[in-house]
Image 1 (cartoon, rainbow, N blue to C red):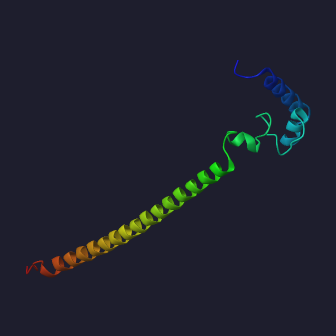
Image 2 (image 1 turned 90 degrees about the vertical axis):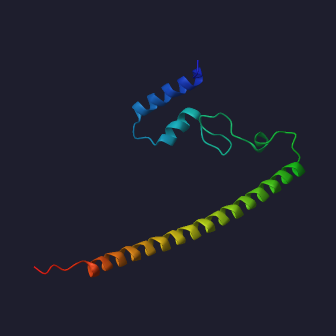
Image 3 (image 1 turned 90 degrees about the horizontal axis):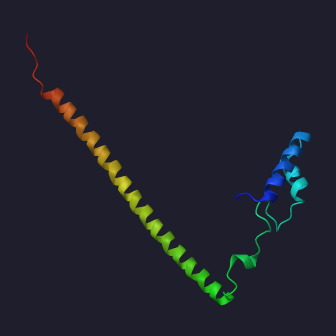
Length: 123
């Protein structure tokens, strides 16, 4: 079974409260079924996440600081590469705009020259 019996029971309880008091705010309905909120408990996920859950108990502060520094250096390097690529893109966009302007100018010149050199009928 994918859904735990306790979850099914809570769902039924929520539905009953919704039928009895449809204007009740959603958070109050949840608190009636699951108890009051607190900073260490996430509804629907059991107990809250604690700092010790976020790391494996074997990492020392020195190892974590070393990993943080390494990540910061990689982040700095990637940001520099991103800036370089952005600058290169801007240069290419400027060049493309210049080419478009030249193309329009040449097309206008050719159109003007065609009108100047077209034979005039003398009928």
